[in-house]
Image (tube, helix red, strand yellow):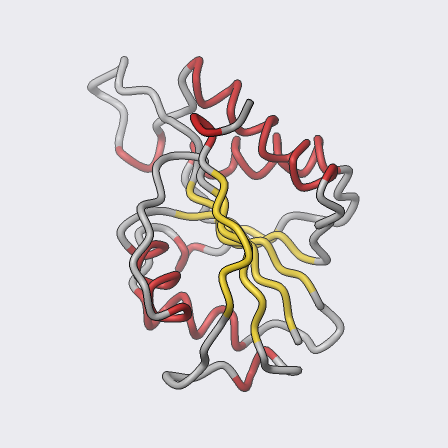
Length: 163
């Protein structure tokens, strides 16, 4: 079995209208929520073996804050294809993971992440900014993920629902 953590980037700033979408940083709420989700991973004992992130500034900032708070010591893998990725791209990225990675954290954007969760669980779930889905996959190898994979959603944390 494999554990897949799917996280939408934390809340981004729209303050500078001249910034390209990929360059938007986190806003005050995003800078608060991203570390909270990292601490949650640590408290739940869900230390990822691999963190894959979109290269967008808001996703990078989210990944770095989460990694710091959950005490992830490896290098974060930033993949261009994760920026505004569609379902097929997300599945292909997961299939490329090594068999030694039991737990992977994927940080990216909607609507792709909501589509991925729906595809794997068979049910749509709203994923606001900084939401974190905890899924267990029946496959022993990432490369075995396909259109028939049926994951179990263990939990979906949304920052506004946390104490």
